[in-house]
Image 1 (cartoon, helix red, strand yellow):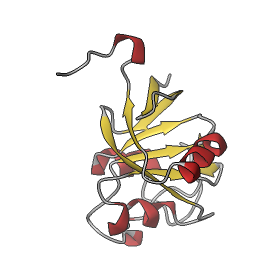
Image 2 (cartoon, one colour):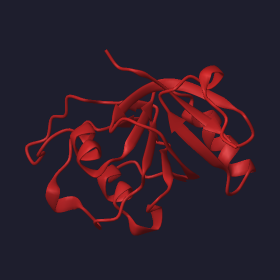
Image 3 (cartoon, helix red, strand yellow):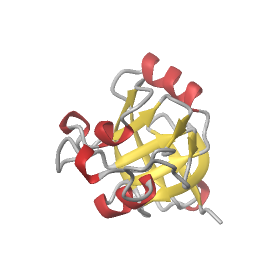
Image 4 (tube, one colour):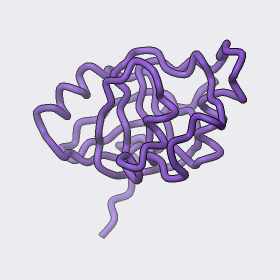
Length: 143
């Protein structure tokens, strides 16, 4: 059973989904990729280092990951997808996307309305957010 997780945008908008990959909380600038393939390369693209990456293609992970496909040792810190496949079928795979993300400390969120989120990102260039497994109503405010 997957654990509930949340994306909280700087304007207070909340998306609820399920976690995958590494667990924890991460915050940063949200960016998106419209690539239909190459999710592993997008995650390890140095341009996405330290950012939360939204994948607009609806299904991700069905080919697993392969160590030879890494672009860099730097990577996004968060990854948001509509649907994550945790049972890949590819003769070159070395494991699941979730395995790759756990190894790299990338926190994932799946099962949210990525079309709506993409629309928000396009209207608000440079918006920041946080992925967390703590429900927004019980989060402690710092300061």
